[in-house]
Figure: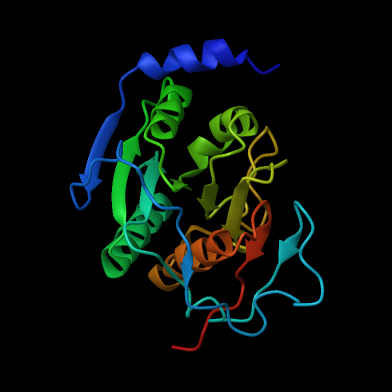
Length: 225
């Protein structure tokens, strides 16, 4: 049973570690709605049929490469866990943000109260919240349905029952879904390569910027080296 929204909001008072790799801009100031710079390539989705909510799409490798975020894109990275897959995802997000001149800030939740840190990220009013780490899946499932105006991107995992504001990027070696479902039988920590994690953040952001949200992007195939 989910707690009332008032109870969730009260948890925001709990401490969270916030770090920044940002331009130093004040996020409280008015901010233009972000947009996609560039266009999706052929084969990202079937142009004749928009993907249904909670559906899985398998884009052609590299079909997301031409899409970039507009200037001053504000992103909060939520990350929890010190395992190698999580570290690989965090590195990919940080490198992407640096390449794309994204205003990135990082929130590292308290493992004993991760919901409070998710609420902290929401209060920052970013354009996008990116989640890296399997330990965040169940807390996200608790919070995201109550904040439908905020876009979330989960890389290397997915929510079992996502709402339209939660997009995920997954592949056969990842696909953790939480809610007591256990780890996928195909889980493979070695599949979290730098190349795949980099593709995950870029493909996921490309989908969000093109309003293709609430879906799972499946990345078993990668562009040729």
